[in-house]
Amino acid sequence: MMNLIAARAPSLALFGSIQVAMWSFVWSQWHQQGHINTPLKSAIPTGHIGRGRYSLQDHAYA
Image (cartoon, rainbow, N blue to C red):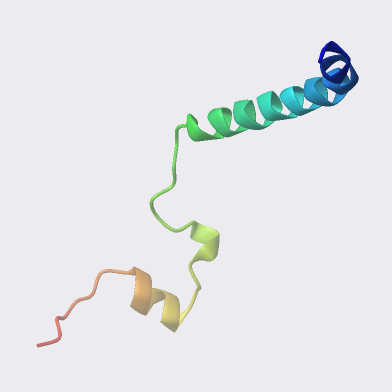
């Protein structure tokens, strides 16, 4: 039984380090602040379509 554990120690160490790296990356991304809730200015089209979709309307449709 000890030979089996000793033979798999390098692969277990590699697997463990990959898991730690993955979960630390997930944790760091999860705890970042500053989520953007509005569209970026560069994503808003200019011209007639942009004004119609992303500006306040002067009239309401009944």
